[in-house]
Amino acid sequence: KAGVTQTPRYLIKTRGQQVTLSCSPISGHRSVSWYQQTPGQGLQFLFEYFSETQRNKGNFPGRFSGRQFSNSRSEMNVSTLELGDSALYLCASTPQGSTDTQYFGPGTRLTVL
Amino acid sequence: GQQVMQIPQYQHVQEGEDFTTYCNSSTTLSNIQWYKQRPGGHPVFLIQLVKSGEVKKQKRLTFQFGEAKKNSSLHITATQTTDVGTYFCAGLHAGNNRKLIWGLGTSLAVNP
Image (cartoon, rainbow over all chains, first blue to last red; front, side, top):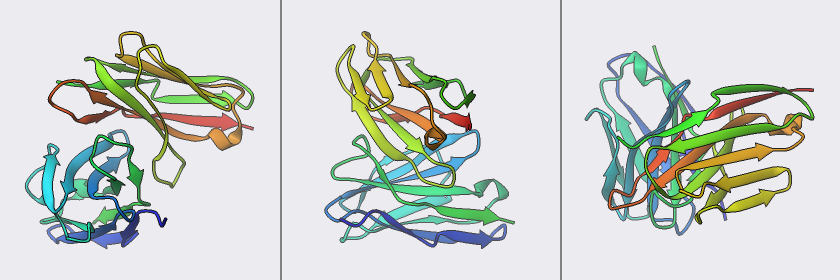
């Protein structure tokens, strides 16, 4: 099976802009979770989508949003970018839910200038 | 709130030395997962522990789950340069609020 794919792999934006990241899960996996990873902060859970519905949410502001399509592909959007949003954004897919073994994609490295 | 503390934050060893990272939870866990992230890479699942007192081995890696299911450890015997990376634990808290809580990771550097 192909692994989790994420596009784009690298992105440079300026403050105030918005960005959309994409994640394609492993075939057959219905749950997609998104994480933000920054040095010293580890993996911060953003949200989980399952069957096109947001099932779990972390403690991030409303500027961070996501959605999932019927083919389980997911997108996350960050509006009004801030310098502190610079991070590696990882998505992980699992067959059933965000508490199962996480299969991570390679991540999108976002730099906000 | 629910936390998983992971120590140490960094560890620098000579190749051939042993290495251990510890995770401690403030509440009882249903299970704990371990992941490894190589520099520039993404986290990769290593193992899941479920039973109280469980011990699992993967070649030079030994994983333990405490009797009270509140702590866990990963021990690497005779480290190699291929062991370099950050090791994360992620605990699933028992009870209704089923969320995976991640430790901050232990970064391992190995001197050849």
